[in-house]
Picture 1 (cartoon, rainbow, N blue to C red):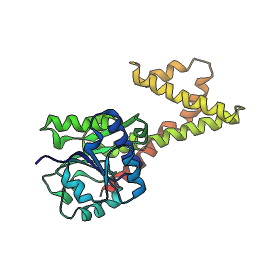
Picture 2: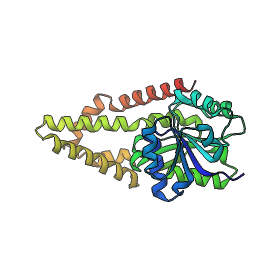
Picture 3: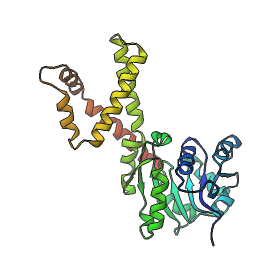
Picture 4: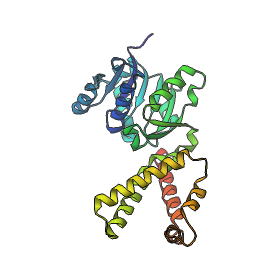
Length: 268
């Protein structure tokens, strides 16, 4: 039976709104083939502004959507299941942190196909990084292309195994916070050295942006790029020495490890 909607989105928070906007702006799906549900009328009003249909009936959405994207907080998943009242989707894309595919199958039935995705905050501006396990859909190229297309509206998609999702969370899911902290610290250092805050912020942000672009597009490995900035007896090497002496890499490793461990805890 043909569904009324190509994509249904349960939850209309910040990330869901970014996904809806990305999908509609990309022309991947016509807005009238998308429906979103949320208990908040204010949130639904924002979705309606994009031209999609809105409802507070999760069961109606699940019954009438070919693909259902779960964009609710993990702690609200049980409530969503109850609200569905036994009407379960057949194809699911989940961005719920820490909720494993098996748990979704346990709730919706073993025959449901689930793609599990970990997006990050820059998805909200179309520059995100997402790890996704789409192995349930390996037997259908159309499904793979559609899911990749939806997620591709938000940035770069890395197809990976669910067993690596905690690591994905630690590196890209939570990674923007580490980068923002570095930008903030570099800005504060600039202010301390006599720059205005606006000057320091511009210098810090653009330096991180340019460096990331260079790392992305250069064939030179990142460790070699570091060496290229460090002239013998120059200024940069003195700063790098301080970072190395204070175990800069070790601190990042400890932070990412703590993040991954917490992700594992949430999934148990």
